[in-house]
Length: 47
Image (cartoon, rainbow, N blue to C red; front, side, top):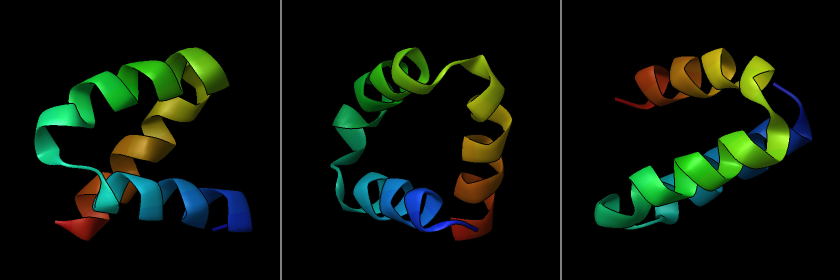
């Protein structure tokens, strides 16, 4: 994982769960759909 990925993960982990959906929508819009599978993989690793 790059430093950028780690920052994203730390933000996701710290964000309240009820804001997670909105946050992910904004993140997807910001970085594009190509990044989505990587986000999902990272979230699964954290569970």
